[in-house]
Length: 194
Image (cartoon, rainbow, N blue to C red; front, side, top):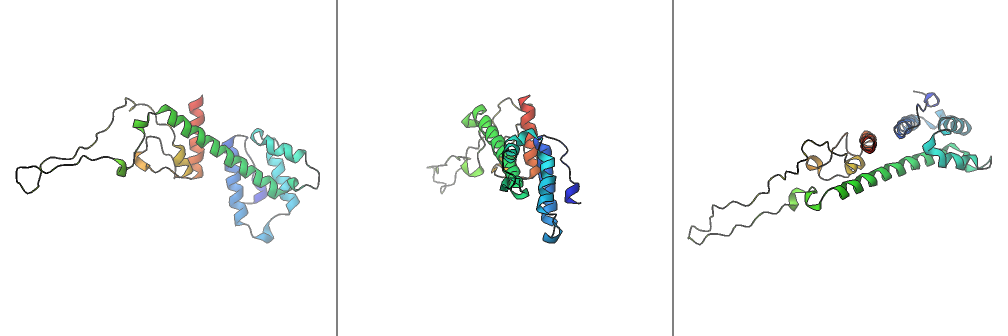
């Protein structure tokens, strides 16, 4: 795959993210001597992103810069695009976590295995050497009536930080922290806002 043959196919967050992922893959596979000239790289990237609405803040800074400015270099433009994608990922994760915390009572939040309380059993006084037939109390499942409702996407899983794994009350899609999990989390979040 040749770097300069890559094309940004759309203007959505998913499409810009896919373009950035492919570009990074190709860039990291290039030997330094095979990398195109700086002016060529900048012109190619500028042509790809100059009309993407979500990058208006970055492209306006380039347009308003002088012709010899560092803002007219591939490295600066690429770092700003990566930062914009990171900011949008963090914003989406924050919104999802906030929404999840506001819509769920504290008693329903998932707890780790070590947090569950077990009733203590006192030995009986009947002289059977401390053995007791009483069993510790085990909490049962809580029926919240939401069995048929679709699960909300887990922002912490998308970021690679969910500690509840299979016991999480939210949906885990893709590998933890992967770009696929992030993109699917954003798509699920966007569908929930419609």
